[in-house]
Image (tube, rainbow, N blue to C red; front, top):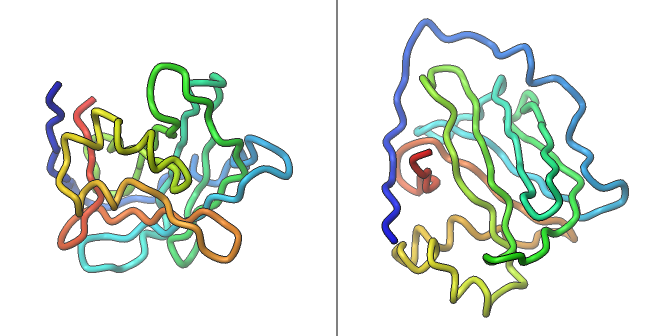
Length: 157
């Protein structure tokens, strides 16, 4: 199984996505708190982005706009392992993207399952590490960098 990394593509002029302010980020009341920051290739926050997460095991999706610091937030339940390692599919929408970008969020407490995952196994160690959320202050943290050094791994879809 091969997975192709896709380059980020831009188009101008830039615009703000008005849909990103819908309050659909609570997939589980009182669930795990997942947060992160969306940044561009220079590390600057993207303040008008939108992040969607898809939990295929539960058939649920959520959406969070980014704030003035590029931050997004979700309240989630950890997905069940159905036929693959527990993960969330993560879609990134932002000014300048011709098409939304797809990545995955894996969980830090699934070391054994993550080690056996075919998607993670196809990546080098640095790229693999960028797809696993980390714990910070009792929350899960997953930052997304669109380009440059330390860019998030995006997949063709």
